[in-house]
Amino acid sequence: MITWVESGGGPLVVVPETSLPDWRGVDPEDLDDTDDSARACAVTGLAGVIAVGAAGARALVLADDPASSCFVPEIRAFVRWNAANDADSLIDAARTVVADPAVSWDDCGVWETDGPAVLLDAGDDGADPGSGNRAPVAVDAGRWRVLAAWRELPRTWVTVVRLLPEPR
Image (cartoon, rainbow, N blue to C red; front, top):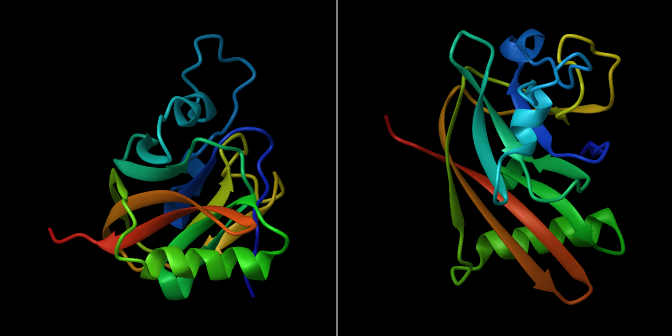
């Protein structure tokens, strides 16, 4: 079953499970816009990578649009709901995008994780499992090249953020 995560108005992030306690989301006391959510909001383009905590962990930011998103393991990609009649047609569109050799992919950097991660709203507190909705992201530990593309297909607009193994 695929779990969709809703945005509260900003980006979504993918944080390694082991680093969730270090993701603090929105800090109402932060007057300098340096909290985790503000740093995620500063990412330009379709996706990017930012630091989590002091131990060197990294979060993948699904930026650009506060679109509902899910992870589709068989294509190792995040699917962002820009416009579609239903989830099945959107995921089918994402599969079409991934399979199309003519798609121009934006290179959004390298994300490294020590294993499974969690997709959540950037404003949510990672240490609080009750803050917002979340979805598991079943990925292996390693380095992942992040590629993103937006496509308009008949009656469906989709953003796809792919993870490709990155050699060390």
